[in-house]
Length: 90
Image (cartoon, rainbow, N blue to C red; front, side, top):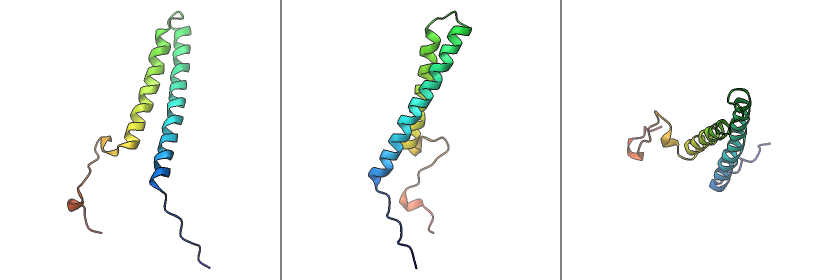
């Protein structure tokens, strides 16, 4: 008995999965940055607020860069996008 072939994934599902991953990544990295900033602020910088803002921004910026690479793979360093006329035949 052969199993039916799996239904192809729609482009909307792919985009929503990437978007969900980006939002989760943003929350995690921003939270980690916030936590590191609080610890650094309390231990090293006499309870100033700028380490919290700086590390939270670093976390959000890292998540944004990862999301940008997810949606636009041409921005990954070392990646080349070949036109259809130059792609090797299989």
